[in-house]
Length: 86
Image (cartoon, rainbow, N blue to C red; front, side):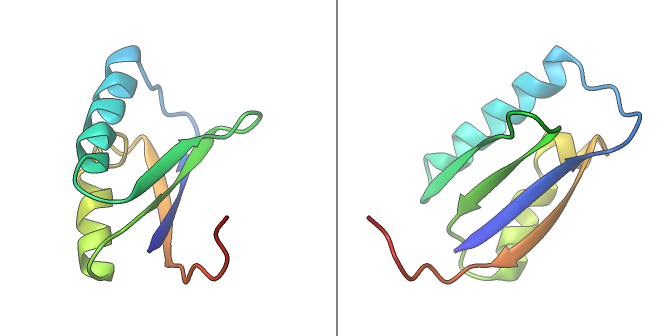
């Protein structure tokens, strides 16, 4: 499992189409693997948790996200070992 935390690029202007493209892309990703994600309530950015075969695949998935590829957001990604799930 991987966790991706997104940070808005300071001064970046994200328009409605950018956001819609981002959501459409992530909905497609979510149909292929375990996925959950959302935006932060009181801070620009968001987080996704998703399955990938390895770090290279996780990076490839992240880099194809329109908000990332358009340099509107940056991200950090870490491998996550889920221990407890209820």
